[in-house]
Length: 606
Image 1 (cartoon, rainbow, N blue to C red):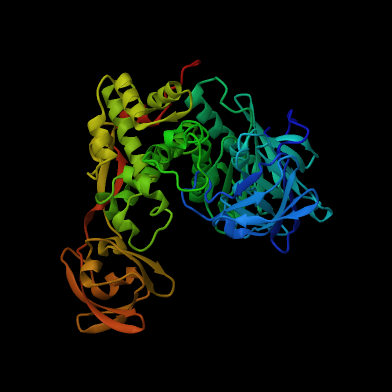
Image 2 (cartoon, rainbow, N blue to C red):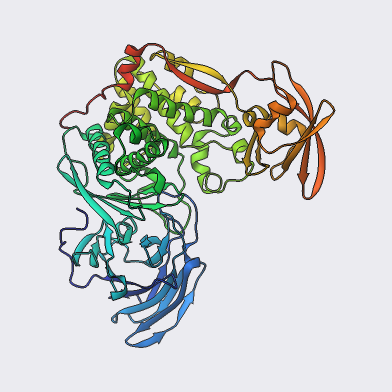
């Protein structure tokens, strides 16, 4: 396991961090950083972002009480900007810095500390020592008596850790330190082996009904399927892997690392003791959790090793731009659910239901006709992670549309008969040595394996905004795309929140609501129809009060905006099949089986 076997390391690492989590009630980590041989003018900085989450998050906002000492004497520190400091010191005497980090973010990206759990990424706690990023970095985490019953888990190699995991760890460099988060608390833990590689699962916050062994068995099948996908029966590029799962009342998310992942899920989505296989696998929430686990594990290959050339070395001080997130996030999103199908954890119908959801999400996003998925990748820093009421009109998700690009490529390659997208992914791994790659590598491998040029498709599907040929390609593999009646919000071009009333969240471009003059933030109070006025509590009530049918209906919407009452003339669109709401049906099961059935195995040796 990542935290089981001691590692050979220098007795005193050149850069050493001691983390004291004593102040659980104050929510403060106390950090002591010792630099054995500092530069005469030693610069230090805290990252502004964490790899895998493409937003400048300004982690230095949580750092306080920074002080420096050398030879026992206080040393002045000059702050250079929002996240950098300079110490003018002697190069022959260790530099010791102490500071505190507030830990209030219960996500996978930053740091959290209270009386029940601790979690942190080094990008939030560990100042980067400029000029020594490639030196070994030591991390020591103390366990005060008040934390009896807690254990610690991390992907770092231990140097001297106790049975509970507290103690000293070593990283080869700052990048490895930044890539190994730490989980602490009264953790539930188990282990399993996938193709000879030990995997550990630790869970924080689960209810007593949690069936951890069931979750571990299903995770083992996912891991075995992913390893088989990439390497056949050959070992993966890591000798151990750690899953850290934080169960909360309501939450979802994950962040990938080279030999671990941090995950968040809702407690209600975990399998429970006494549940039947049928009930567990019929749970939409549990299927979503398995898809998240599959997604983050697939990232151990696709983005953590096989990665954009722009990410060959991270710059922690600013945005790191790439146009390839459609490949690294989108293709991973295609395979996460597909591997669940191949592992036998979901059936054809469930997989097609998940694919239908993705297709409808893209079709119901007007921004797909405005922004290419390559541009969406580049703009992640300012658009995807900073969404507002206009986001669906101006941008498209590189996760969802990127997964549909992968689907189109896979189906088109399979129709050609010479290879599949599986073959392409493995060939890219071999071509790059499991390292940095560019779009040119994708095109070269596609041509090499299929015997033809794919630049036109990549230009249209990735760099253009034309609709993807989903219906045509799915039909060639035994799946039909059927238009479905849209729900009331979609027919009107709205996204709303309903909680004792109708609150407008987004007005979609080109819809009836935009034509009527609705705005995000409006409260839709009621409507006037056929000489009567009605209070509106849910959009489904439109059919009750205004009627619905094959023709458009003219009504007046009563709206509150900034405490003003407005009357908006609204044309309710006729019901019927919609171009942006579809379902998938199996028309030829034998043909569909060749795509959704047994995976094409990887060669035994690459």
